[in-house]
Length: 481
Image (cartoon, rainbow, N blue to C red; front, side):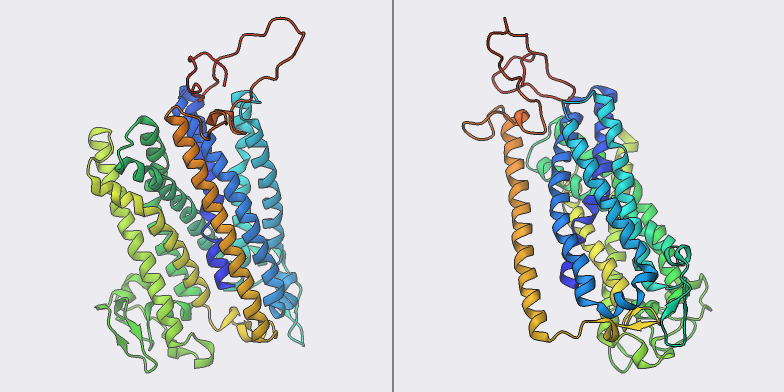
């Protein structure tokens, strides 16, 4: 489950946010008559479709794993929190239909009609995130039920089960993380091109729009992250103690940057900042922070698990702080001279910002899931009671099959993206993408040649390229694609 979730979540930022970024570029192309913006939007829509197809595979595996690996949890609690998965599935099918319509609409629909048919795409993506976060936040702060004499949940309140105390903080923190991560990932591709000397308007625009979106959201995410940490302090104090390596309850608790918790409660390594943890939790050094020893050892993460949570949390906070500095650098240069920073170090940092953001997403989920241990449903069901009783040999066989499948799927995904990149570069250079084939604008994401009709009189003069279309290689600007 950890492997499949960690793999699938690499695709989630693009699935949630790339439709919005694409539509922003599409709108710019239509409103300003910008051919570069239209070309970028069309190409990003192709990437969006391929990414969605791969997400179908990885997401489907995850849905099966809930039933196969966690029968105890799904059998007992499925009726309480399962609606979130139903919402996500409904949003998934809606998004698939909308992507198909959007792709089909290129060069077939009127420009603004095509754009408005794509506008519901981001809403469908956000609805899918709503369902998943509703289910996960319920696992962190379960409510909306009562237990009968046998311990089974009854009197389920769907509204309370969806809108749990952690839903709001988790949802907005997650959504903003997806948008800024997708922005940095897309911008990073064009930052690499910029470093390699491709400094035309196409690469400038491909970098500026997604990076601006990410840069605007990065400071907001800092405050959302601070808020969710404080919510964890109030609603899941043992998870907070694990994330901050707090062993004994008390006031004036120091903050440790990294470091390792030992089984006796001591901390090795790391940078100690006196009283800061209490200040961060309650804005005053006198704030009492519950420690791991405030509950029995069987009800809290182990020293190793707490260290994993702590490192993931600190890594997430560190990368977030660096990205804020990068966003401020960008804003300072833009406000001073309405231009991009001229330093190559800025573009080097921008090129790796996408990978760094993906790693922070992974770290965030590690903090959420490992910090809840040993509970799978916080204070209601342990992992040991939820997991399948299937023997280890069968699980290792299943795991091996999943790893092989994922390697093939992600390898194919990378191969398709590289092929598309090569085709687009050759099209921009004025050569056919593949010997014997037409130019890039003849692909399913560009114009179709009109079929020849014999015996129908003289041919109709070809129309010029539509908004965002570049002339084909070796053709005058007014010729058909």
